[in-house]
Length: 302
Image (cartoon, rainbow, N blue to C red; front, side, top):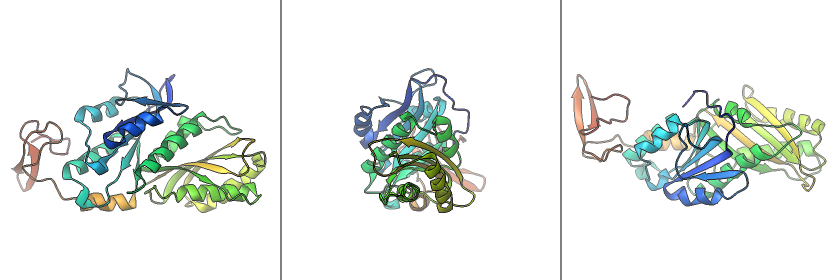
């Protein structure tokens, strides 16, 4: 994870999306949504500034970004969230792609892993939830600093909006809405270590009702999980919606896929320069590295 100070003074955009591979077109489409800007590449340190940049990467189709793409993520300012379209099994995960996934997860502040079959729905839910959360004024406001606090609590995240059951009890509806968001079918995320909740409801969602709801939400998440909450009122709404950002230590299903992916072997093309990967022996250890640039999937060159 990046772990440095990613505060952006006077950002041009509250939220920017950068699509790569099969999700590039979807990123451009989402860039037309209110409050969202679409960028063709990750912003550089002195380029366009966004409080939150969402990187859409379709690793399920084996589309690996070039090394320059990763470099821009490393030096760019602001909070970076990667949205990874995960393959269904290790058999579909090429070793080069596996290395790129690990590299991306280490370069950003947090990663949203989307389950197979829910990629496009998950991308839209992540981007639209974040955009609306950052743009909507509230009785109790949330801002990018709150999002950053939650995402930095764990390397894996889930972002979704849930809806209450409209039973007439705003506090009860809010708890149901949060649970629905946490159980979103596109999200591959373990027990939350931090949760941000923005409750959006009609006139019945008073501050007192929101406080009651927060008590119920606290009981629905692990005892030691950090909870940050906000409240916004939309007169036209008849029930409560919960915009949720949660972070966790793991993405359980995807971790299995990554751990089962076979190790890179000599003869494969280098993910950095396209050169030839050969086997090298150093003492008792053996590794595969590029003959041209020395890339071996680590920071060390032989």
